Image 1 (cartoon, rainbow, N blue to C red):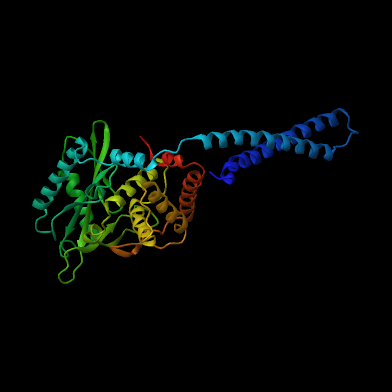
Image 2: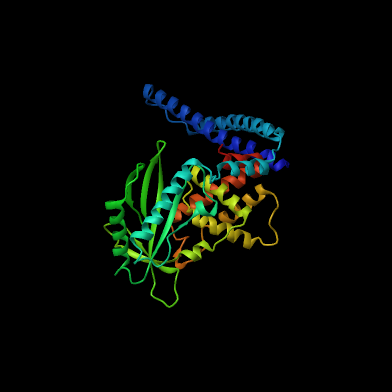
Length: 362
């Protein structure tokens, strides 16, 4: 480790110590002088004494802070560097959803039953077979946080509007659906949530209906109903293409990176969608093409660096609908994402083992 890095905490602690002790000492002196003036009204406030007290406190605090920082730096310098890539690879394997997970298997059976019922009861209205999509199918779900998504394509002539399609399907579940674990049906922005309670925890199957557009030979592109659920916004619809979404393929290593970033997002409440994380990983690999590090930790840092440098201005759209701008969200959230990325990068530069703090949640 270079001398600059060794001095980093010393300087940081010294600055904090100087500020805290300087202000504290100045405040004590000011209170003391005010009390003396109360007893002797002719006595004037001595600003030079106040400044001198503040300066002495800052000096003392700075020395003390530097001393504490020096101890931190010394301890840091002696820490053995861990094989963070091996540790993180193990972590990813452990937090990744296993298809043999008994709760997932139970939920999957329920989703198969829903698909079967829809194929029977909406046979004349469907424009194709309902199918499971999303992270559980892609192999990028977290073991302690997963849903199953089912896309349901209706033919272009099945309903007069996407709102009629959505509400008809909602009423179908509301009136007909039963399951011993079923507890609640929920209208969501673009889907219908079927919530179950299994072993004391809630799990969800999202049913996503969409109406195929009326174009020649079209079997995949259509429109989703958008339930704005607001007094100020009207309900609407948006374009989609489920097959295009399914065409976004990650390599095995990119899947592992997405799982790691999803766990970071969940544990640190990072305001970014999983879909955007997926697209940022693809973009980062394309941007660094020919210069991709072999080390797994360095790959994580490559993605985090790319996000930190691009989140404020990069325009990323969803592959199935160029009007769906994934990076169109509050600037305050973007600033928070940038700050969190900076924390990871700065901590890693000071102490490489710190990467485990952000991604090792076992």
